[in-house]
Image (cartoon, rainbow, N blue to C red):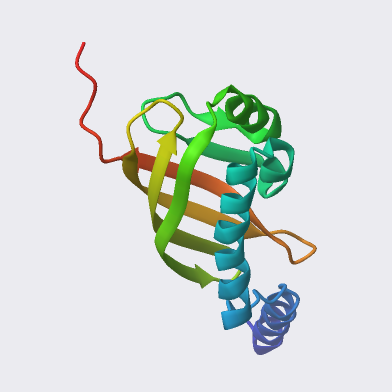
Length: 152
């Protein structure tokens, strides 16, 4: 390869690399926004406000509830939420958040009691994605119950 071709190749690579969009840094402000989603979800669940709750999720979000099939998207989330009995108790604790660029994940403990059912302690892992407008949305949630499996 001649020197002029190498220079053209190097210049082309430099331009292409320079044209890549910069991945935003995950800042403390981002961590606070993601933690605020945990708080907002609790408010929605206590109020039984399923419409607002679903707006906190991305359009193609996945939700994995304990002992239930996966739910996908706003319509599925809304149907699932409306099918749940009212909650007498729900709280998140030990919320931790980490992130990198446009993705974040968080964990928390959950205490929940649906009306007429035993109290349950659970854990959750949630994945968040920053959209093109800079808004953080829930992308996926997986919840695991501490109750023993139901016997057949």
